[in-house]
Image (tube, rainbow, N blue to C red; front, side, top):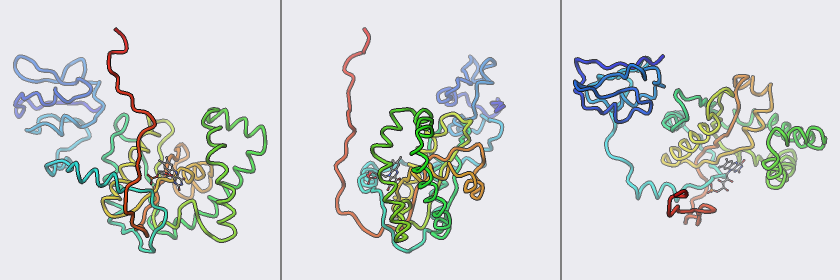
Length: 298
Ligand SMILES: Cc1cc2nc3c(=O)[nH]c(=O)nc-3n(C[C@H](O)[C@H](O)[C@H](O)COP(=O)(O)O)c2cc1C
C-alpha cells in the first residue's frame, strides 16, 4: 500500500497536493490539508503530490524525495519541438558507427518519462547495443517468419489466428503486411540483406507482462518517447512491428533473451546514425479531424 501521509510540521497548507492528486487522496480542512481518511487507500502511487509539494511534506511509501530531481526549468521551445517533429523520419539506412552505451542509456532513461495507464509502469525494455547482438537473432527471426507463412497455409491455423487477432486486423494484415514477408525472407536468404532491422547497430524491444493494464499502449508511448529522444541526440530510428511479433512467437529465442514467459513483446525500435540527411518534411495529416461544434446531446 502506498500509504500517503502529510507531515503536519512542515505542511504549509498550500493545497498543491489537493490540486493535483488524481485519486482525491488529499482534502482541505479548516486548519489545513489532510489525507482524506476514506480515500487514503485510493492512492496508486503516481508521485504527483511529492512532485508538487514545496516543503516535502507529502510522502508516499516507496518514494524518496532524494530521487525526485528538481526540474531544469522552462519547457521545450515550440519551434524547436516542431523542428524535431518535422525532421523525424523512419530511418532505414545507417552508417557503421555504433550507438554509444551512454546514448542508449539516455534514450532508455528518457523513454521511461512517458505516461502509462496505471502506476507502476509495466514497460520492460531489452537493449541490443551492438549490430552483432541483432545479427545473432536474425536466423531465428527469419525462420520464424517463414514458419509463420507456412503455417498460415493450413486453414485451421489460419482460422485460429484470425479468431485470436480479430477478423478485421487479420484481413488487413493479409492484405498489407504479409505479402512483404516472403520477398523479405528470400532477400535475406539469397543476399544476406536484412529488411527487418535494416543493418541497424542498435535496437530496443519493448515488452510487458500480459497481466497488465494498458501494457500494449504503454509500450507504444514509451517507444515513441525513445524515438524522439534518439532524434534529439542526432540518431535515426524506425519502429519495427514485425520483430516484436516474431520474437514473441519464439519460445527459445525469448528464453535466450531473458524475456519472461508471461510477457508480451509489443514493438521494437531500431536506432543508428542516419546515412542520409533529408532536405524537407513530408506533408502529413490525420485521416480525419472533426471539431465538435455543439454538445452532441442537448
Ligand atoms: C507501429 C509501427 C510499426 C512499424 N513497423 C515497421 C516495420 O516493421 N518495418 C519498417 O520498415 N517500418 C515500420 N514502421 C515505420 C512506418 O513504415 C513509418 O513510420 C511510416 O511509413 C511513416 O514514415 P515516417 O516515420 O518516415 O513518417 C512502423 C511504424 C509504426 C508506427
